[in-house]
Structure formats: C-alpha cells, structure tokens
Image 1 (cartoon, rainbow, N blue to C red):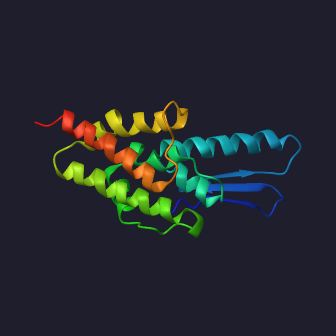
Image 2 (cartoon, rainbow, N blue to C red):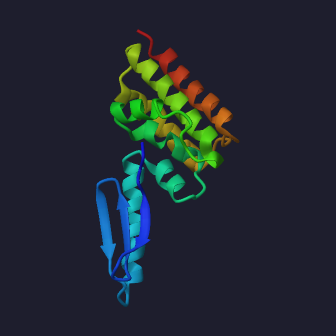
Image 3 (cartoon, helix red, strand yellow):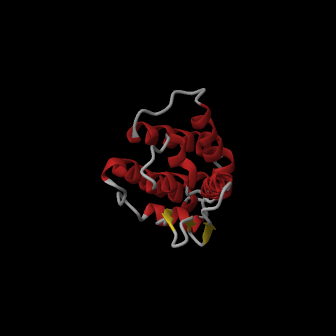
Length: 165
C-alpha cells in the first residue's frame, strides 16, 4: 500500500499535505502554525484509523513503533490485508525486515480467514487488543520483526485454539 504521504511548499509559500485522496492546503499567513499543527494531527489520526500509520510514519522517515506495524492488520479491510500480504519487503532498506514481517503476518491472518475465521472478529478480539497492549507497553515489547511475528502468531493461535468449532 503506497500511502503517498507528502509535505511540501506550495507555490504561495504555504504548505500542502496529502494522504491518499485527502489533501490540505495551508497558506503561509500569520497564525498558520496552529493550522499546520492541526493538519498534521488530522493526517496522523486518519492514517491510524485507516490502518496506514506505519506507512505514514515510514514515508516521512520517522521511527515506526512496533504497535504501528500491527495497525493495518488490526483495522484494515480484507482487501487491504491482502494487498499487504502481497507487498513483501518493498519498504526502505532501514525498515525492509518490518515490511516483510508484516506481509508474512497478513498472510497468516488471511490463512485464518480461509480456515473459517471472520476477519472482523480476529481484529476485534485479537489484533486491535494486541495493538493496544503493544502501544501501552505493559507487556514486553518485541525487540525486532522476528519477535513481533512470534507475538502476533501466538495471539492468533491462542484465539483460534479457544474458538475451534
């Protein structure tokens, strides 16, 4: 999924943000710093709620927290999870292992769906709560993509084992 997150000067001296289909244009006027901060907050929130937060941060060359890699798995549609599964290790070199791990986990989530699990239930009962636990850090935070894969697979396995029909 190419988030297409961009920040650049526009021809009037202001700034322009774009995220997917949404764009903000702010003129360089006195007091526009508040509007710029508001636009950043809106873009961050939109990326989070669309399941694109890791992509958003990575596109800006910012550090991506572990929980953010779980974001699209926890909030994305089935089509988005399928797109992630097919993306492989397309990210920048510095985060390529995380992109590959996320693609692998998307494949694992889809395999569970193919075995009869409902994606929305996996998201509601496993992936979103795991994302929240990873973000609040009461549990040990995985130290790298391999540990994150083990953490997510374990949570999926526990749920599937407890919900066998």
